[in-house]
Image (cartoon, rainbow, N blue to C red; front, side, top):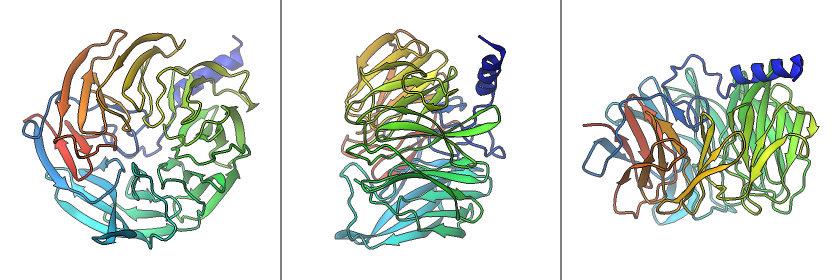
Length: 423
C-alpha cells in the first residue's frame, strides 16, 4: 500500500465526523442514532429487563409521530403531529415538544408548521412527524419533509423557517437532516424529483442543491445523510433510489457514486467503520454494500469491497461493533456478519416485525420490534440472548428508535414516551 493511500485511510479512521456539535457532551443524544449517528451510546448502568411495572421511572402521553427523541442539557425534544379535528386527519399542526428529562414534564410545545392535508399521502406505517430533530448547541433543527424545515432555540423560539423544498413525497416524510459546519444537509427524494440540498443553518437559505442523475422507476426514498471527513474534506454520504452518492458538504459537488439498480424507498442510515461505508439499498433488490469511500466518479465496479442479499433490512439501520456487523430485517431475521469480509457468523429469528434501528449501549445490543418487545443480546460471533422485554399489550406500535439520557433508555411508542431506568 503506498504512502498516500495509507495517509488517506488513517485520516479517514480518525476524523469520522457525523455531527459537529462539539459543544454537547459525548453522552448526550443529539441526532438520529446518537451524537455520531452510529447507534452507539456510552450510557452505563442501564436496565436489561423491564415491563409496564418494572424499571419505569415515568411515562408521558404524546401526540402522533415517529421521530426519535433527542437529548441535551437535561431536556428531551421530539416532533409531533396533531390533527385539526379529532374526527379528521386532514389538517395537521406540525409541532415541536420539549420535555424535562427528570420527570417528563412538558416545558414547551410550539407549532412549527401547519398543512391542510390536501393531496398529502401518508403510509399506514408512517406519520406526519417522522424525521428526528438535530441539536447544535443552543439550536434545534426540525424537518417535516416538503411541509417545512425550521430552526428553533432550545427554549422554543422559532428563528427561521424554510418552506421552499418542494417535491412530491410518496408515503409521507422520513429522512432526517445532518449538520456539517454551517450547512444543514437534507435528502429530498420524491416521486417527481430527487435532489440533495444544503441550507445555511443560520438563515435557512439554500446554500447548494445537487440533482440526482439516476432515473430509477421508483425514485422516492427517505434517507438521512452520514458525514465523514477524508483529507480535510467533509463528505455527505446520501443513499437514494438507484444508488448511493457522496457529495462535498461545502459545495454540493458529487464526489463518487455506487449504483445498485432498482433499489428504492431507501430508509437505513449509512454506517461508518473499518475504513468502509455500510449502505443498504432499500426495497426491491435489497442488498448491503461495504464501500471504500476513497474513490472518485462511478466506483460501482472498483470500490465495493463486499455485498450481500441475505437478511438485509429495508427499514432498520445496521450496527457495527468492532469487526462485527449486526442487523435485523423487517421480518425479524437478525444476523451477525464479519464486517471486514461479509462472512455470516449467525442468523436468528426474533419475534415480530422491525422498523427501529438496533443500538449498542452498556455492553449489550437492543433490538426493538414494532409491538413493544425488545430483545437484548450480548455482542459476539455466537448468538447469546440476555433478555426479552415487553411494554404494553402489543397493540401500541413502536417504530421510533431508542435514545438515552443519563443511565436511562427513552422509548417512544404510538401513544407515550417512557423513561426506562433501574428502580
